[in-house]
Length: 463
Image 1 (cartoon, rainbow, N blue to C red):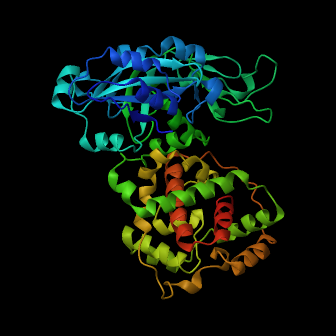
Image 2: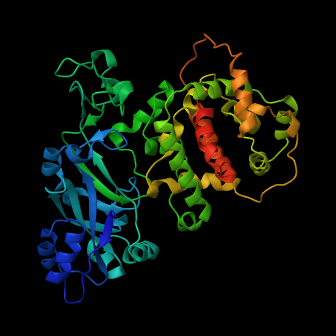
């Protein structure tokens, strides 16, 4: 269901039948009806029922590997009312710049979640009453018309606790290492310093629990903001080569911009979104096989681009490069990770390809968060080409997403000799280029629109 929905209060108040229907449909706490009856709403003060968060026991940890147990939420959810205001990003702290207030918070035992009654300032009169600003008209209209708006809570925590060994940590340097993360049954776990988000064969998930905290805000955002207690995780993961949650990864790399109406209205975005979901699904289920091995090894022989192609690419503007990459896609040609970096003029480390592997799953973030990310793909949208691309004859058969390319990759794999060199972990720049590469590939595969391309596109990332 939608995270937030306007409560249907008429000039006569919220009738019993209206409240029963509304809160039953949303499986919400009916106690909000009694609370609303005691509130004298100002003109155009808009009551909204908002689902803030769920407990770990029923919903597991979130994508940032943060957990909030039922006992914690029951004790600390009232801090929403005491401290929080309705903002438009987590950076805002001045109540005078808030767009509403949290009138009440309740813990829904049946649903295992915290629910809020927030009052948005729909007019100057409401803003004066709550001491803030008038909420944007477009957001009010979206809520009233039943459309979704993304929200995120902000919290301050004194420490967090390892789900494996129970280690309490105030900062990243206090996180447990793998060798010292032993649970109460004597089993070694992944450790929070490098294993957040990992799942063991017995179902154990490595995350951090937050036993205490103070909720500071509930904000209208395009992506969930990182909580202050975990701001260093993104930097650490980039430096160490460990994977991140999708929302954290995209936000940390600066690829998610504020959600705007134009993104929603761009038809290409929904198509790109479907392609991303399909690639991420294949990536999570694709099992190693002889065919996958031969294709992935065959792709290794397409590391280099012919010098003439590189020189030609470096004469093009960014727009020209995007157009030529789609020109190649129209002829079933897709560049590999290293080829893309050379074509686009990026400098990457030897560990760059390790950042590309598994990237689709990390980019597959929630719908309300992904449009700013996928807007990057729209720069590749354009007319289809019918003339042969420049230097067409210099691209290897291994670059072709067709039967000839698959055949050629198989035979090239027979002569492949694996390297014994060890490389350092991928750095922050490697992750940025890896994201850009995968966004290019989403656009290319969408343009080609052949089922086999999805599997081939995923395999090509693992060489």
